Image (cartoon, rainbow, N blue to C red; front, side, top):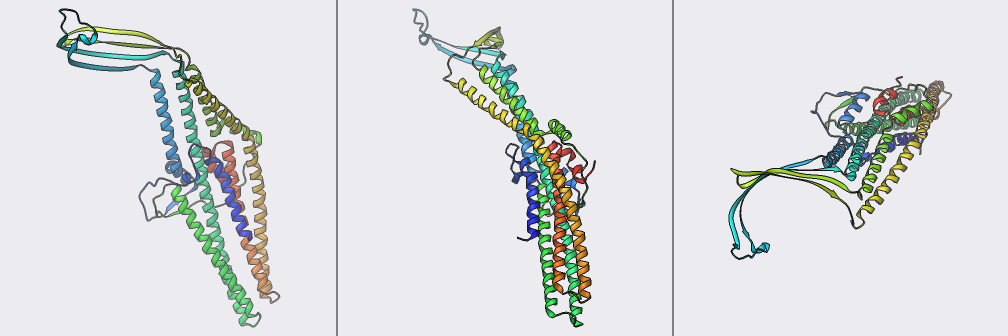
Length: 465
């Protein structure tokens, strides 16, 4: 495994370190969903100028994960409305006109002189009925649980949006790095072409052997292969980005932002932890889910308590619509659960287990805030030092190549030094590109750690204060 492959794998690992924690948390959201979008807009032959901010905005509007999670939130809204309906009066109306024939014998009346069959006769009945709970702890607990579940759903939507920002943003940053690799490969190929011509001239002058020409031509082919690989990777990265943000298939676009290094503003651990405690959506969602579980448990326990309901109706009844009398019924109903076959106990046990799970989840998220913050700050510090080292190595490798060319022209060195110097330039350039990308990924990790991805991702990546 060469140095270039190692660096690229390291860069990919850095991207996954940002993406996977964010996309695995939300309900039903997997990385494959985050990488897909709903295409919107008309296909145009004019290339679209796409900045990092534009890509993030389009991802938040058209990414499939956001669309699906928003619909799950709407389902939670439907559950809340259903729970509200259980505590509100239910009113219904009916109008009935019937012709009846009754059998007195069927009701046990067989008195002499009393007809066995009465009728036919008409009955008109128009009535409005109302039924409402007055005291029902189980229904009230279910409503509180639905409210908390809806709040958790809203937090999940915001968290999925943050996951999409990280995914789309990281894909854009990877594309930026790939674009820089393409530029670097082109520059290396141009250098290799110039050196091939130089060795041919030196061979014609009788200053170098034929093997030096062949060796430099091989180096040129290596540079061409590197350019082909870099261009292919860059084109595929752009396709993946286009799909994630919902661009029409085949829509050409260009990246307007470039990979540059900008140091991060100083942030203390304590400041970042305070921000994370206030803004982390996974913490808000965990708290809401715990509240929902506790409310559901209270509702399950309250299932054994008596409930009071009011049932009433008012209407008119008579042989026909023109001959009616007004009637009404008002009833207070006390319902007392006596034996349910252990159903209530089962609900309590299940709800209690859910509460314990939600408590553990909340403790894990709350306890992990400081770890996430410290890890992100350490990564930023290491990445900044890595950029400095890579930049220095890149400058030194350029100087080495210049000296090798001078020595070759002077006839005191062969193409082995040139080839080695060219490889050092290629590796140093790749190391610098990877280090700049890893630094931007570290800044994205900090945005996620403090819980302000949607608001601060673009500004943090750009190095804005």
